[in-house]
Image (tube, rainbow, N blue to C red):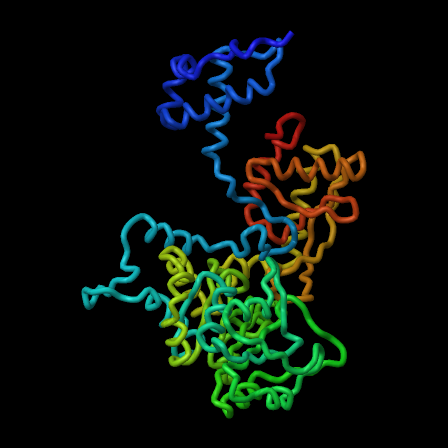
Length: 461
């Protein structure tokens, strides 16, 4: 027969049990009391004749509950998926200098919106504007919390209750259901589609421009390409046409970059400098994709348009904090020296790693994994990608480890779960019934090796 519920000790009795004081000291009496109540409730739902209902057992369970509450669900992982700027895994890794800059301003007060020279209130944009203008050639710049916010703010500031002209071939959708038509509607701008899906000409924009036009928008299709019988209007021609009609040209670069990536062996991606030189009035792009910085939406352009964006009441709701500014300022500083850029910005370093180096790393790791797993471990060629809508359709040759456990698909699924349960979870990809660890993203080889013993037997956490 099951034990009666009265066998479960009272909360007060558990709080007086040996070992309770240590938990109170570490977590507080209120938290421990809540955890004891939770442990007792769990025991009531699963009470049997052999259940341990002693104070020590309940206190033990409460301690485990407290540990779970104290443990953050957000933790570092090894991204071995082959997608370097993986949205689900945090996109760009930050340089150590950027992390140090965040720690410095995060530890106490800072002059975030205080003019030290004048001794009065200042503007947080000043910490980034000069550096962005020097790098891009823009007259002015401002930053919000991501590029989706930048697009929303720009449309609301420059085309509220007016038409925004966009080529049908650029009505993009990216992850998280960000769709240009929906964002336009939320921004209060009226979408005016121009041309066709595969071909849009200057004459199409000319026919659509009129007294209701608020701006012309060009969207870089950073997560897909249209091939075959296609035509698109060059930024320079679109800018000239927009300016002839007295409306601004807004270019959304999406992932965006400030460097010619071809210099590092990567595919070409349009830069903010090129768009501004071609006549764009405002250019927006992300801080945490190809730029390699923290999440941010950067807008650069002419002073009149940027000032209108700054004066928008929504700007306050979308602004960045002091730690983002500190990190972004540091990363932008690296772009002043293109020769050392790849070594200083981890995202670019990982994307530009030579395949031969990755193959050598795979050859070192294969026998180590073979020694701790009951599986076949092979060095294989892989195709990595930038991810997060960057460098669409551009695969980057890589190498990795193909792990084939005995037992078929169920065993592969279980093995992938064991890797995810490591102290620093390892995220690979299951492909054709095999677990593949693409090593392009493995920067900390020693840290990866140090925890592999947890994969053996019952050592999995």
